[in-house]
Length: 177
Image (spheres, rainbow, N blue to C red):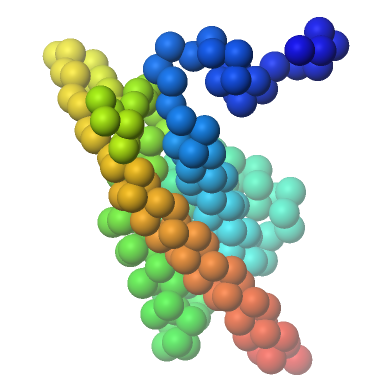
């Protein structure tokens, strides 16, 4: 290994430094899920800025301090107020509801807790620790198939928000005098 290059996660995997030994496929799948979740959050932020009429700098100064749930609340409120009866409002409401119900809980579990491979190597086990008042340790198991289905769902919802963004741009162009 070249001493001048910084180590990457895959370098560590190749060098067998990881004790949990997630497979390359599992590492790549988890990384892809996190990247897709980041994209989803970014496009939701941009929709908030666009509906609010804010520049990216002004919008970012507000949304940077918001949780993902707060961003979804802001987007649904803005959409309902600005788009009222337009079909885009219904689409935004549906996408936000699906994100809140199907994405946030699993995303939080995957992003904020340690993982290890299952005994059979066909999934990951995530250790969830809560320490609010009383220490609780729970384990959640995700099969590789479940993780891949979740990745697909996050991607589809992100694409849905992207389509909304394109349609919203057209909506504002038509509404302009």
